[in-house]
Length: 272
Image 1: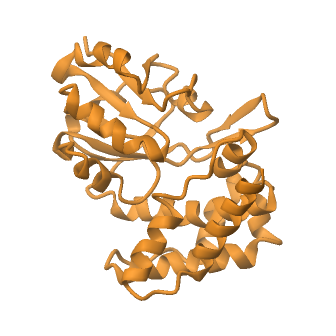
Image 2: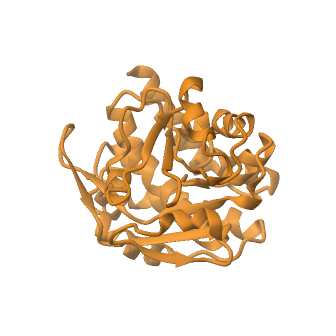
Image 3: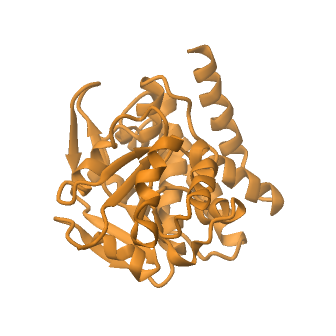
């Protein structure tokens, strides 16, 4: 009998995101907020515990430090973004027994209280230690694509996120805005991020047309950044556009569109 799956979220997050609820409906994970008293129930299982980490980006360093402090060595980082494992290692967490996971599903916000989960692309890309990924066994309706290296999938997902999220948020609209009024901004963001990827030696990216084709099933979705904005949560750029800006500047790449959207979205947030 395997140990329970522990799903670690940020303080104050009472429930998982709807897509996570759908994903884990067959295994009923134990929910743990990042508060010291609750870590004891995880560490009690020692090496047998499997911790799925899905925290707000700003809480990721503290979550990694908590893992180390409580002797937890096996985790699955269910986080979008670039440089997730870099953050974990910088905080002293050994990622050799861990895994990364990317889910290509969307959560469709019908209104502010009702959520419809779409599974039109039930693709779950994983990479890392098989013992950590064994926690995926028994999940219903999930197509798992084990990857020998997550770099390409991670970049492909990140390119969409850094382009769609700020564009849709600035327009206050579903993702389909990138096919019309937001197309020019989306294209600038995507192409600049793709150039950073190429200059880093991480390979070529899908074309803009290919990226838009990937987005078609998610046109009606409300992106996570806009959901956060509407819920009164600050926008998260740290492992997304901010990382593109950081890497791009180091490589003398044009990242002007990313600088612009970060400033504009943060300005909107500041005005309330």
